Amino acid sequence: MQRTLGTCYYPEHWSPDIWAEDARRMAEAGLTWVRIGEFAWSRIEPKPGELHWDWLDQAINVLGQAGLKVVLGTPTATPPKWVLDKHPDMLAVDDQGRPRKFGSRRHYCFSHSGYLEECRRIVELMAERYGQNPHVAAWQTDNEYGCHDTTLSYSDAARQGFRHWLRKQFSDQGQNDGIGALNTAWGNVFWSMEYSEFDDIDLPNLTVTDPNPSHVLAFRRYTSDQVVAFNRAQVDIIRAHSQAPVAHNYMGRITDFDHFKVGADLDIASWDSYPLGFLEDRVGASADEQRKYANQGHPDFQAFHHDLYRAVGRGRWWVMEQQPGPVNWAPYNPAPLPGMVRLWSWEAFAHGAEAVCYFRWRQAPFAQEQMHAGLLRPDSADAPAIVEARQVADEIQQSPDLHPMQAKVALMFDYDADWAWTIQPQGTGLSYFGLIFDHYRALRRAGLSVDILPPDSRDFSGYSLVLAPGMMHMPEDLKQALSTCDAEVLVGPRTAARDANMAIPVPLPPAFPGLDVTVSRVETMRPDRPVALHSGGAAIGYLEELEGSAEVTLQTTAGAAVAMRTGHVTYMGGWGDDAALDTLIGDLCARASLATLALPEGVRIRDTANERFWFNYNAEPVTSDAGTLPPAGVLRVKLP
Image (tube, rainbow, N blue to C red; front, top):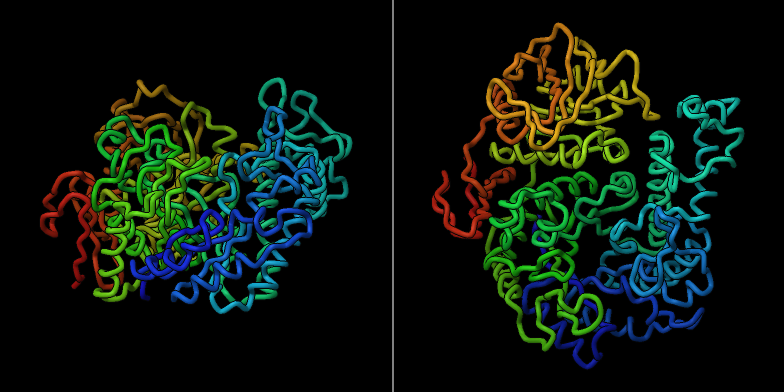
């Protein structure tokens, strides 16, 4: 498949006199796609029912006449002030009971039915007008669900919706006494928390001490379902009027809703990649890593999300927003190392992206993002990134198409498990995302390409190694599928540690078929008290006491079992540091007959069907098996 480039454009920010020149320069730079419209509701409808389409008609036509394809965004992330005046209770409410305010974006509660109807109306109007427009070649729903902590809302609308959701959940289970079943499932006899009816149930915030974890997990599932329903409402309307594919632009390390379930209603998954902002803001990188990669981004964070969103999109995915220069929102906002915009673009393509779109075309001289760089400066002169974008466009034209392939290694990711870990981390700084990312990093350090799989996967054909660490609730049919597949399998820590309602199951976890391992006790450790392992490295943060007759494959220096194995299934009862995970992955790969590489620090690879891509995240040249890689270097090597 041929890869394409694009940009994000806001014609409402600029005089129509320069639109044609902008479009000409975009096409000249080798761009194909232009996303517009996702924040433009107030210009489309400045007053209720007063619709101004002429400017948007003109913008779409100008872009299309220049040979560009439009991604049209629905504007529901930024409802105008008059919408709030009409629905003053539509604002999301934080966990302290404070409503969010107007003056920014994403100021709505997913549970508010009045706002949902306003969204249906504006999306219907847009889809009717542009659904058959030949220049509108794709759609984007809303913008960055979950960004700015806007998924969870503790509003009156959420309270009523949550009660209705719970009533339906327990009635769907065939329970005659639904509230009694809920009390039993949640263990509400503890602290006299039993309810007499569903309308007694409040939201799990502002309690004196911790709320019941079962209550919190149920509320997170409800909230995720609200995002799914909100997105589906827009997709259904668009599909009734347009054959163009529909996407949503997800974010990095936003786990408040189930992206797989949202993605099931979409044609394309996309995400917004800001490597330098994320390094400071959400990677969890060490101080040394933040210094070393300040101008490059973390070597694995973007790749992880590329693989995640390829899974969410069932193979079809884009980067809808690619950082082109300094951003405005991180603790520190450095400029990319020369060559990194090109590297980030090619890394996305190597992982299967159909398109990479740079945010934004021109830096805005006003409002909240005026310090966010674009492909052009505010005075319309070229910014450094457009030079690299042109280079990528030329390279795309001169190079062969890319052919993705299934990797030999699979890593399962479960949003429900992330919620469970968030609710009950048991130790400061411990998270499911962090555990999964540490395993992903270890796989990448070994020179392996990785597929990420959703939790409903049951067919593991073609994989030599499957990892499912930390999945707090693991259904029995998934346990069975893993225990009978042909791959080497790694589970733990905390795999199957809770039932579907967040209770400790009996028999004790992991209760994995054919694996005689029982977790008898759990402890978490201070960061300055790692537990050394006999083979090198250490268990950090989280450690389980293991019992059973399975073979011990990793142990502490004191002789306590940390990993145990029967057949092709290994249970890891601790959170390994980098050295421990490298040992573990090396052992599993040897058993699976997977070749590994000793990559230089900061160098990563990604395999396609017939090529190997090498990426140098270092600010200095590095000698590798493929030769010398310059700083921010990219090298394509044909596979034998």
